[in-house]
Image (cartoon, rainbow over all chains, first blue to last red; front, side, top):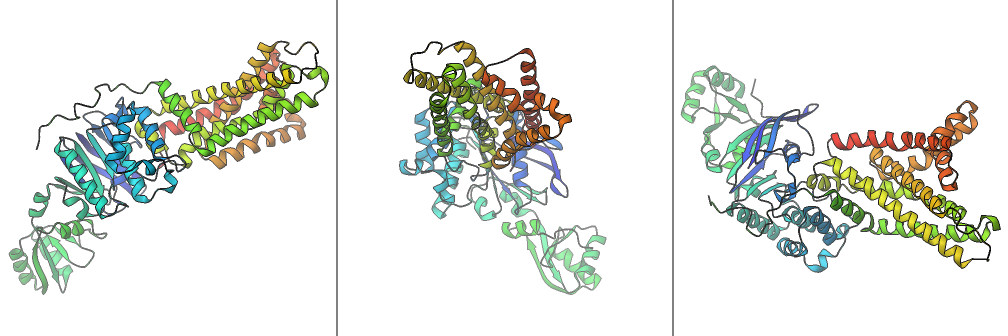
Length: 295
Length: 259
């Protein structure tokens, strides 16, 4: 069980604020957001690599840094490039195995599992392709047979077969009762395996729920000739509005209500449709760079 | 949702933290498992052999004894030992492995302690190699005069203290700078700059004897240690080892691990 509560860490204007969500056993949590939204910052705080300004992040109720042998509980992959380029893949695993106290047979099973053959394992990491580095880093994360996996952009650098392979691996891990938290900036990558989606934008959580819940969260997308007039009218009627970067307005009012309000305000509509059944559209609407309320 | 127990039954139940001894072994392994690390050790061994042979062959007859030859050999080796100490620490940052290291061992003080202990063990090994090479060279070049081994134990003890100080100086610089090139450049430049400063500014000459590691610690290699020299060794160690270790160690322990 991963629990993140009101986690805040500021770096000047950047950082994360008041981030709360959880990852439950038996489920895959997809942590989605554009690059720079705060996914890595959140995961680094979860793994004790940085300290929060406020809030807590715990693994089964304990801060990560208090776990006696964290590699046996949590498999972490934050940056596949963070490996010594002069060591072989096998040696990289062997160093982690020595810290974790796992034996050679587990090492060779992990190499099999991540699809690195003997020749690849004996090569220096500096000669690895991005995909091979990714597989090795995943092997280090899986080495201690952890119940919880925390993976930052695990599909980066993998070819299509690799992406399918990692999806199945993570799905099976969760189906056996494991907890998986994986981040991505691509909705497509996670929506097929995630039971639970957490969307972060500009350091704040903007959506949290199952894909079904997010799909049915009602909203309406509307475009108008004078969008500011319509936005004011909707807000005057007590509705929330959110201005998308592409000039479209998102509101929690039903399409019919929007039509009535627009008619009263004299705003000429150019587009009006219910939104929410398309996750991708919701994702883009929530994470548009300029998603603040219209004036 | 399944209710299968996890982790699987094959996973060992033991979740004890890795012992410090195990972490020290891991750090020693990191020092030798890359080509750069292995070549540095080979280079150190070659310097030890060359140093012992040259001193034994070219030295005056009265200086062909363990104390003298080991002292000179130790001084030559001591130029490279701090680099070994620096790399023990800085390779984690230059290769970004600190991320994995501190993820697996979040109690960072244990990693720092393991690195310092690995450094001490490497200094012991270096001293053993220097002493062995010196002994072999002295026996091979034996001209039959007496007094090859006066005070052998004391000479080896001083040489060991000297090498431990040099290696820990490297570990301290590594912690302070966490960058291989910066730490190495500062290590080679700073004591020299300090020596030049203290020898040109007469007011600082007294301070130099107390604060210059090469002046103070070389007495150890030379095998002459008085109470005053002992105090000078300790003062220089405080400034060049303890301070960098405290400042650099604090940063490593309490600052975010570089992304």
